[in-house]
Image (cartoon, rainbow, N blue to C red; front, side, top):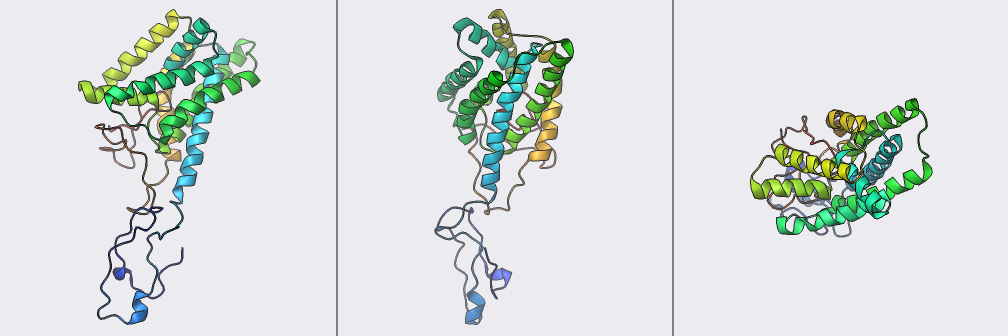
Length: 287
């Protein structure tokens, strides 16, 4: 977009969100200015203007993060050394029903999303994409990747799965398109019950691991490694992949926060994001 021709900066009003058609700043009085001083184009978008320049990057980042999350989870499955908490449950249900684990991931995401209704949570684009993409990516990777043979290969798959999962978590969260279904459940229960997120998360994940284990899900050293490493890895990934916030009024708005829940970054300094470890839907939480 071209810059103002001869108008001084002081003649421009506040600019609305980029990509919101027809939104311009308030009129500025031309009194005392020569005509050519008021002919410069405002920096705000005009009808038919381009959407926020960061939105395409955020969409690519969202998609890449979710696909990588599903692929990294498949690596943990092939390692046979233990899964992350929710996938312990998914694997147990897969063995019980005969459905593929990716299909179970997708169906469970939809079921959990239904639990948002009484909690009055509002999904974002990232919430829906989470449900649709992770299970498909997981099944696709499992179809291409054979079982690991030998301890060294299994350990390598486990470590790669955990590291890539941490990177995927940061990619997905930093795109800022809303929490995943399981984290919306966590934040909704936090709002309704008043209990700490730490407590609610612990209760939920202990419950899904125990249930999944009883159904035949894999719990092992990979589960422990994941629990210990995913927080620091996701934190590092978040710092690397966070899309810088645009100046006020120059970018398209992010997905709305769940009703009544704290904003994803409220109370957290911009240079010190805090991540609740776990699934890609883990929201950025204030310290």
